[in-house]
Image (cartoon, rainbow, N blue to C red; front, top):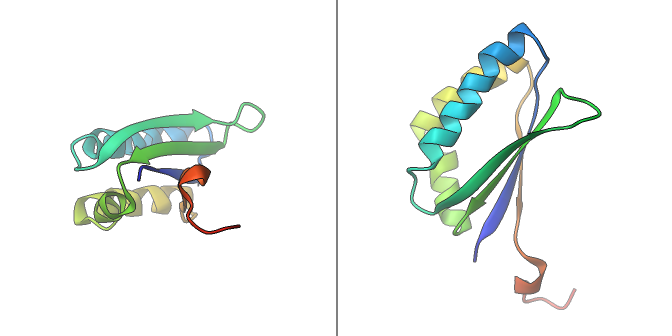
Length: 103
């Protein structure tokens, strides 16, 4: 079952963004070569440009978690978190119609 991963970051405009954005783009480029990667999109909030969101689509959670936990990704992600001074937030979603419970 395909999943969507929402990746939230706060990136200050100006010098910080000039350092962080290339790292985010590097993660995206590397993700495209990972098994199970389907697509990704990087968005900024129009009302608050410091709020950035990546929507990443994967064939399944296992493929996403392999990429999430890879050493290569972790090195870049650590740089991003160091530059922003905040931890990146991850939330995983699956299509509601695929849920098997009765809620």
